[in-house]
Image (cartoon, rainbow, N blue to C red; front, side):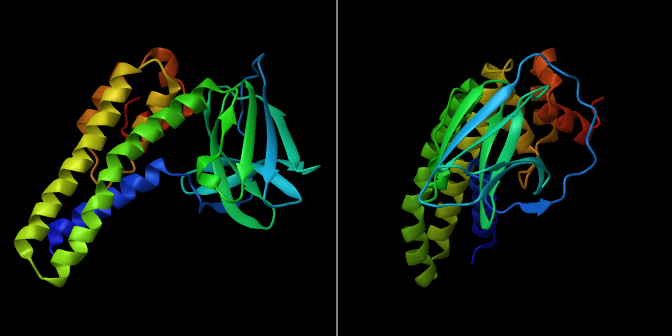
Amino acid sequence: MNKTYTNAIKNLIFICSCILVLSACKKEKVPEKENISVVKNTFTIHGTLKNFHPQEVYLNKIIENSIYVIDSSKVKNNTFSFKGFVEYPERFAISFKQYSSTVILIVENADITITIDANDFENTPIEGSKLNSEFKNYQLNSKKIFKKITYLFPQFQKYRLENNANQLADISRQMKEIEQEYVDFSYNYIAQNNNSYIAAIILRDQLKNTKIDTLKIINSYNKLTDSIKKSPDAHIIALTLNLH
């Protein structure tokens, strides 16, 4: 197989995975609690379960590729709830006793309602949270870009069987264009929403790409407002790139 095409496929598969629901995090014991400043506002998460019946639901902190249980809720009449506070909004994972699937949501100090259907974990409705709605819109627009890939796979199979190097090279070029379209879309979104916690979340995800444009990430980070730079996602960016 054409090496350039293979690299393009790997890059796009990786990026697609970043915008889909995280479903394979490793569960760990919760680490020693960090010092967190008490804030006045609190969050509540009211959850409803459909088409599966776990006895207990867990709220998890995400650290790298693992999740750590920080709270649990017994399921009663297919419902569960969590209450607490966060100093800054960030992504958490909801997991379930005796089930391997997880659902990602942004926890902010708001009254959040979530309906989780075992038949459609990826499209979990989350209401009452402006940040989750904003991030969902970003994901939907990102997926529109990657839908273009579906038209390339049948062609790829055909030209691979024919061992048609010229056509495979052309597909590789198209894949790179789609990849660049997504990257440009993400950075434009960050620039236009530099006072949003979603911008910090998206920018942090750029650190996970197989090809990292360090200068571009730093320039985008510098354009974030001071309040957004205090968020956990922005802090990780600064720590990773030695920006403090």
